[in-house]
Image 1: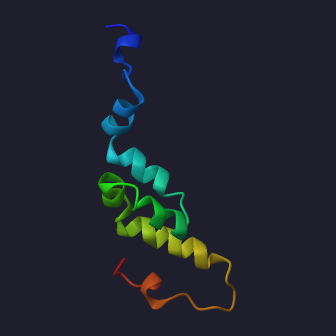
Image 2: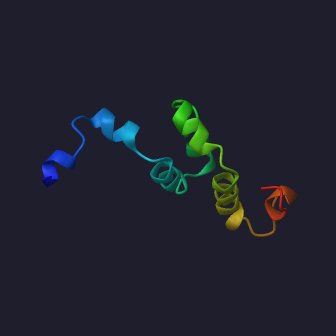
Length: 80
């Protein structure tokens, strides 16, 4: 088969054929506000955005430069 035949025929097929892994990778760069907004897009984005490790990373980045301010205890626990 030739390369053009392997490409999706529409933009929507590209979005819906996407694996959750790519979406989760994109969301891993989000701050907490953007991550929350992404979970409101649709059910697929909500499912992807509910991963604890995404939230933990976003929260740790948010607190990273807050010298003298203790991070919430849940950030340092094994709960997330």
